[in-house]
Length: 140
Image 1 (cartoon, rainbow, N blue to C red):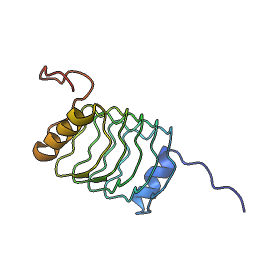
Image 2 (cartoon, rainbow, N blue to C red):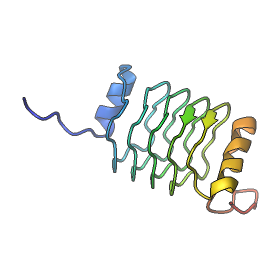
Image 3 (spheres, rainbow, N blue to C red):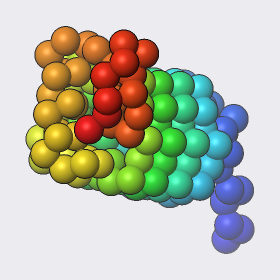
Image 4 (cartoon, helix red, strand yellow):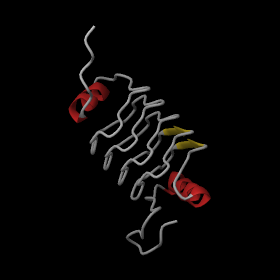
């Protein structure tokens, strides 16, 4: 049997648009900036080292997924299920998590990072963990 073609931005976006599950998909190191993952099953997906800037994950399931060292700048995780998801060393600056269901995430800056995520879940405000936000506050 032939090996399947490697995934790229277009093929990933097409799979999600058609409602295919990407559970356990290996998406490491891909440029997936701006891709709409809204409502997708991304359980245990691997996004380590990927460019996900401006991607949306509204209502998606990212349980046990790995975003280790991913660029998640300005992403939208509103309403997502974030259960034991690994965001360690990820850039989450400018991302939102309004109404997300968060349980035991691994986040940059430990407890301070978790508190920032929890504030975003309640308020919908963007998180800033590594730099100053536009209002002049320091990151965690």
